[in-house]
Image (tube, rainbow, N blue to C red; front, side, top):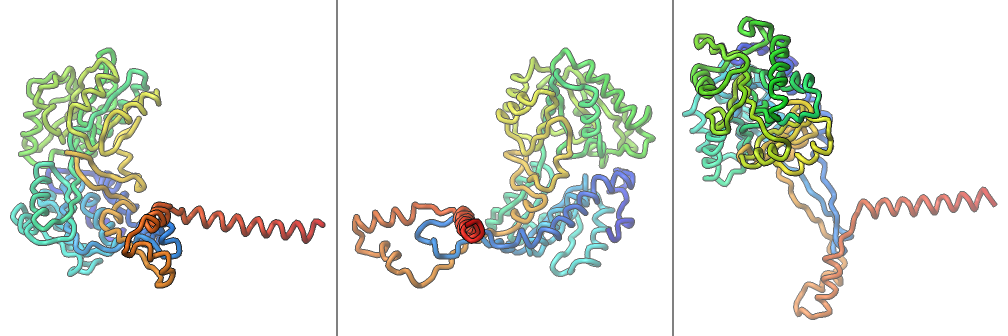
Length: 452
C-alpha cells in the first residue's frame, strides 16, 4: 500500500507495536477489504431481481442499492487504521461521502491519517476531523445520513441518542465480555496456544478478545500451566522487554485494569509498571462471579478463569449475561459445539480458535444487544451503508388484469385479486424451466435429425 511505511508506527507513544504486528493486524485486513471492494463492486451495486406475483409477472421488479448520503465514521484507538478505514471502504464503495473522525487517544495515527487521506481522496468529500470529545460532540450535532461508531457501550449510547435527534440510523460496534468455554474433551495444548494468542494480542486491547474462560475444575490447573508455557514461548521470560508485547493505552486505563485484579488469585503474571503502562500477561484462577473483574469488559491483558460443572452450566452462565460480541468454544465434540451455538446468542461465534473470524470478509462482523447493532466487512459494509431501494416498473397495457382492484369491489374481483396477488413466481426457476424446455426441444430435434 502506498504510504504504508509512513504509518506503520505506534498508535501513540504508550502503545508500542512492532511494524510486523501493525501490518498483520491493521494494514493486511484493510488491504484485503479494498481489493475485495474493487473486484466485486459491479456485482454488489447491480440491480437485484426479486420474486414476483402473477400481478407483476410481466413487469420489472428489483432492488437497487443507492448511496445513503454522508456517513460519519467515529474510529477507535486500539486498531486505529483497520477500525476507522474499513468502514470508509464500504462507505466509498456504496457511493457515499464521509466524515472521518479518528480517535484522539491514538493521536499519532490520527495526525498521519489527517495528512495522508487528502493525498488520495477528495478532501471535500472525505474530510478528516481531529480533536477530542468537544469536536466529536459538535460533529454529532450535525445531520448525517448514517453514523458508524466503534468504541465503548457507554459512549455508544450517547452517539445513538445524538443521532436519534435527526432520525439518523447508526451502526454501533461495541464490545462486552466475550466468553471462552473449554471442554475437557479437547486438545488443551492447542486450545491454550490459540486462547493465549487471542487474549494478549495488542496487550488484550481487542474488542473480540476472550474476556474470561469457563472450564471444569478438573482441567483448570492444566489450563493454567499450558498458558504459562505459551506466554513464555510467545513473549519470553520478560514480556516487558519483548517488542511484540504492547502496553496499556494510557494511565487511566492502566489504573482501571489494575483495580479489576484486586481480590483475585493471580496464577500467572500480575507484574506492572505504571510509568510504562505495562501489565504483564496475567491469568486469574478460581475467580468468583461477583468479583470486580467480572462486572465490566476487561480490555487488558488479564484473563479470569471461572469453573463450571460442564457445558450445561456454561450455557446458563453465558445466557444470564448480556449478549457478547464474540463467543469461543474449544472442543473435539461437534455436537457440543452446535449445541452451544443453538442455545446461546452472540455477535459471532468461533469454535477452536480466536479472533480469526474477523478476517473473513464474507462473514458479517457486528454485535447484538449490548454488544452493538449493524454489521460490516466486505459486501456487508456495502449493504449496511446503502439504501436498498424497492423498484417496480410496470407497463401501461394489461389493464384488464389490473381492473380487478378498481371499485366497485365484488366477490368475483376479490377472488381473482387473491389469485394474482398471493401467487408467488420464482423468476429464477422460470428461467431454468425455460432453458430446460429449450434444451429438451433441441435434444429432441437432434435425435430426430441424426438418429433416424
